[in-house]
Image (cartoon, rainbow, N blue to C red; front, side, top):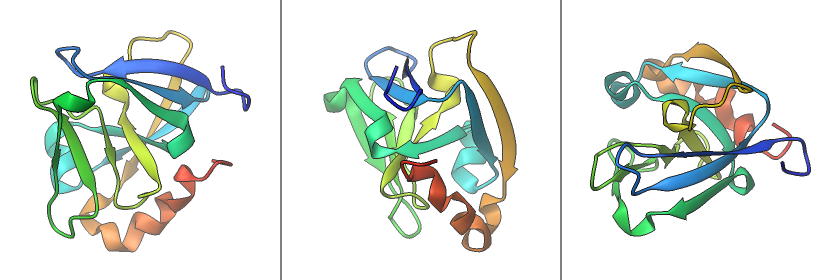
Length: 135
């Protein structure tokens, strides 16, 4: 457990080459984004500060995809193609973790809210606070 009450939760890609940990509260608010890439991949996003994310293994198995402005760094496992986490355009100082890629945990409650990523420019500011330490 981290000093602020968050629990370090493990996760990874499908083949297991990439493993990470994310410090999350017992109740997580996540976003189901309808932008072009999130909608196609089914990414359920939990945005967190840099200090609450750590890559445990597989840095050498990652590849990065960018599009449009090139600010977001969509990181994938080169072996299985799963995007477990990425550096979001809305929060370049933090990480977005795909909650589908966390190891199962019965003590984690997830609240999923829609996010209108198709109209990203109008809504992205609503996510900026999520990568701050007080979020």
